[in-house]
Image (tube, rainbow, N blue to C red; front, side):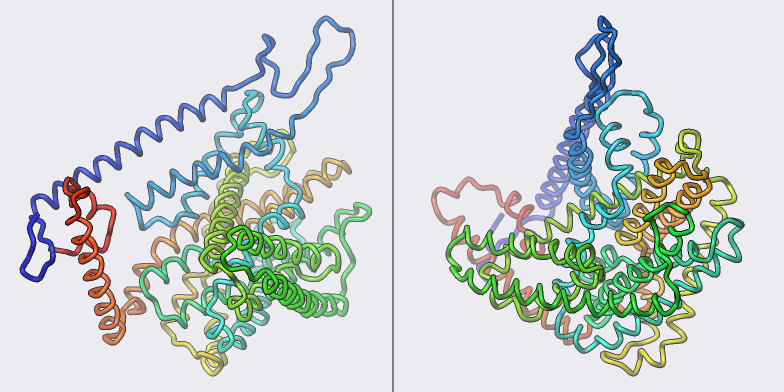
Length: 577
């Protein structure tokens, strides 16, 4: 290492290459060792049983010397194993993809891991291991309403709060166009595909509309991260994220209406509701406008509370402020959805948008707020996508067929899944083409290339998975408790097979090839003005970093520091020659 005339440092190419190779080798070695250790711990958990000689399943008491019946007591504490086990797996998956396979979306990898767990878990029946018990007894059968309440508020609020408020306001009427007419059109066209093309004669129109509404909800997680990474036009980012958020709100309203009509067909007292067209329109207006009003009220109340917590230098008060926003998001969803029977998604979305626009100036520590909500989003996405993959794995493995008389996912179903994947793209293309003249005259306008990317980038993910699991578990519970015909559980099993399959295909195919498509369409190209700005800023940042580093290396206590180590950990120095 030597100093150049301008005061900057020069590192020989051989030394740079050696440092990079040794660093990469060390990373792989650490990752391999961690993986081996984690596998050992996992196998221990999976083989862990009670200490009794009879090798009974966890939580079972069996006194062979007593004439009394065997007493079985479940251990609810086992339920916490699966989510945190999943988060640890997610850490390893993130490290692997971020270091060795950056083209793979994180959520897609977690869905695949969940599928593998689901496929293997169904082979462990009677194995008596804790992980199997946590999955099969608690998470696989989680109540639908509890599932939505646990996952949706955090995900919806974080996405709404992260939007560019100024651009969203300008594109608001475009978002409404995406949210209502296009979602309704997509729901009806998808229902027509299921009703007339699928070979299931027992699928009613209400069930097909429920199916269509679930598949109308899109997920921007993987694509939004890609758009941010490649520097795509801000207008496209707002359109992709805004469409997904508004679609989720409308899709869940349609899902609520048609799922209630479908559940009424089961004939279980207290399950389902007769909703005619007039009642349906009334419910849509009530859930949409009522949810928005509740969200605005919660948003303003939270901002006022945060305004009172104005001691910016008090670390604990800053933590309380962020905790307040977290509690308010979940209470907003609960109040709107359960207490007042409006749309919890629209309420949480409205609350997030209000706080995005008017609440940032009242936040004591904006960075802390962003970091905490990023952690919440990461954990929720990790668990939900893994759970979705787990349920899909159990469906396609046909392991539920024997025990619960549920439908098997056969060869023809795989063929119809591929057909559905193609037809959903045709439907999105048709809808965007029909509404293009209107969309191109509203708000931020748009272009054919951008709408073409939106057609391809319509991933199915968190909300669709949550809704599919909710309806599946609701019908399965009603079937077991009321001893209904097996066909009802077969229908929802097939439904989740298709929804999970669509999530798998869009996450693995669309999300993976979205980057090359952006480049092909020229949407990842930066303007010369933007390139110049980034170049100037980058040069100044490098100069400042190098000057400070040289000043530090000149101090006696840093004289033995190896520059290659600094370069490896400070990315901005890797461009110094």
